[in-house]
Length: 475
Image (cartoon, rainbow, N blue to C red; front, side, top):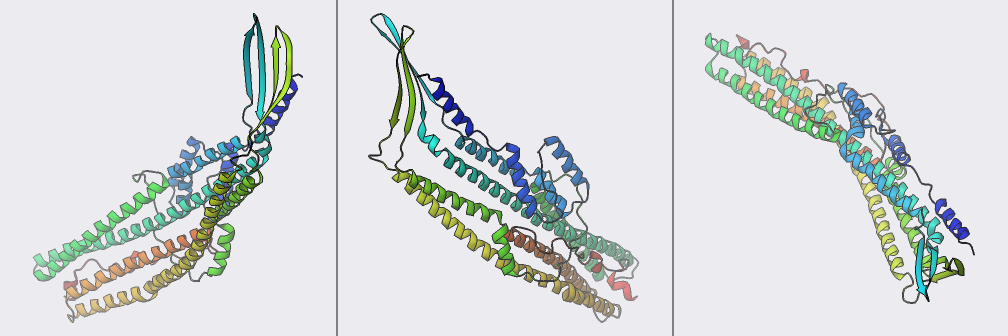
């Protein structure tokens, strides 16, 4: 019997399982999933990841005003942690390649010398169990590769949500710092003018001290706001994958919260369809069920090896034959594999149920939080800020007619500035809550593509006349 035919058959069987997905195909599959779930206007990081081209694109985005969409786009291109997430594709692809190929055949060679002559024995064998299990192994490994893609895509969306939160916090801190800097400048000008009036004998010393104290407090608040803005900027820069010293320009102000309320039931139904981590958990559960079926169906099959052998002596073939070995299931009949698969399936079921419950609760809480934060911001805009402005105007008139002292006016103005800062922070909290709702849903919200009005500008709380100290305005 010629060894070439069985050897050829084995090689054909091995080559039949060699076709696997390319590295770029895995990246493209993740990018496709991410693109479908991103909010409108965000540029996805699709295609090949050439380092030079990516760096040029990041620089191009940072050179423009850093809108929310551009910030997320930079992070998707440049975040180091995201590159580590994509690297998991290589590990999963390696497992898929391994599952798609048979183990190598074994070749044996033996030389024996008897009565002055040499005899040679050659053998070639292949584990046959791997051939029988190859389709199931490849199917399970391909499903695992898909699950890893879903997990990575979910991590990308989580990063996008983190960037959105950091962007809103940075912009709000920037807006507050701008307001505090303007207030400090106005207070400094007022204190300088008050000192001139005092030196001229037209302003009491107590009024001068009040102006100087107000200027000092405003300067401290401005420095504190600037430090908070720098901290928020640094956190955003880390997510973008750039140094915090890189120059970029944020928009002038946050957008005001729009009217309207979301319906939890509709968003929960969307999450069941769109959450990629939920899809990954469902895929994992199915994988564990398939693995359990495989362990049960093949529990009686042990190691099975087939091969051929040829013995020659003096250049002449003496023996040709087939050989086979099989593992007898006397002491083990796959009990350990079945128990392990049952445990992994039970754990996957529990994780899936936990995630489903968490999604339901996350959406319910996020919907309520969005509505609460929207109402708080609206109350500031329509009620509290107009009230503070009216109180300042009324107190100013009373000071002019000497019904109130300058200290009372300064205190009321400080309360107006604080209320404006709280308004900006309430708007920030609304957009953060909205981002968390989008993350809970797993995709864009129904009104994400709409245009929103800006928040009330800082000019609403700045004094219209910074040229005169409050005590002297009645002279």
